[in-house]
Length: 128
Length: 128
Length: 128
Image (cartoon, rainbow over all chains, first blue to last red; front, side):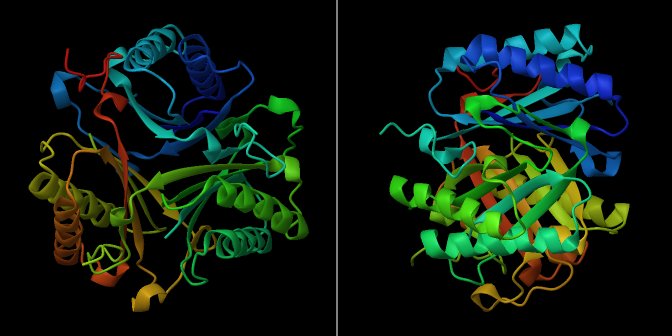
C-alpha cells in the first residue's frame, strides 16, 4: 500500500537504485507491517538545477548524494512507528547502498484505507 | 481541481497518453462531478529501474504496461463515490487505450477545498 | 519543511528555474513562517504530451508557460495564511522570472508535524 516516490541525483547505477528500494521496502516491512510483496515505488532522477535543497538546515550537513523519500501510506500508524520507520530506513540505506544518514529526507503523506485500488478497479482495503 | 500524477512505462505513444488522460478525465466527470474543463494532469515516464512494483500483490497479475495514477482531490467524496471512480477508470482505460484492468493502480490524496489556487493567486474554492 | 514539487515546461533556463525556486521560498518565508534555509524543492520538466492542463478553466487564460506547484506542508496554517501564500507566490514569480499570474497553479497537501525526517532518521518536529 505504500506508494513511494524517491528523488535522487542523476547518474546512480541500477544496483544503487535497487539497493535503495530494497532497503526502503525492508524498513516498511519491519516497522509498518507492510507485506513483503506490497511494493510500489517510483524513482525520479534529478539534475542539480532540478533538485534544490539546503545543505545545512537543522545543522545537518547534506552532500551531493542527498535523496528525498516521500511515502503515501494509510493513516494507521503511531508516532512511535513513524520514528522507528525513519531510523530503520537510514540504518538500512547506510549499509546498502551506503547513503550517509545526513542525506536521507523522509516525508509521509497519510490517506484513508479506502483511498487505494491495486487493480481491477476495486477498493481492496474497504471492509464490506 | 483534481491534480493527477500518472506514472507509466517509457515509450508509449502520444495517442496512448492522450487516451489515458481522456479516459481518466471522463471517469472523474462521471463519478466525482468534476467539471469537464477542470483537467490538470502530469505524466512521468519511467524506465524499468525507476518503476518498481510487485507483479503479484493481492493475487493481481501485473504486466509491463502497469500504470500508477495518484490523484490529489478535495476531501468531499464518499466511499461509494471513490469505489465508483476506481471502477469507471479501469472500464474506460480498458476500452481506450486498452489497459488491462490488473494494470491500473490508483491512489487518492485528499485535501481541503481551500488548498487550491488555479491562477491569479486566489483560493477560488474559498467561500467568502 | 515544505517539500515542493514544481512541474514546468521543458526547456526553461537554469536562471529561470532558480528564479522560480527563489521566489517560491521567499513567499513561504514571508507568509508561512518557513525558515529561510528550510528549502527542499524538486522540479520536473514536461514535454507537452506529458503536461495536460485546461487553458480556460474558471475563466483563467493559461499559456505555454503554465506551472504547477504542489507543496507538502505541516497542517498548521490558517485559511488566511494560505490565501496570503498564493498571492505572494504569484506576485514574486511575476517579478522574477516573469510568470503570468494566470499561469500559476498551486496545491497544498497537509501532513502532521511528526511526518518529517530531515536526516539521521530522526523526526525532528516531534516534541519530546
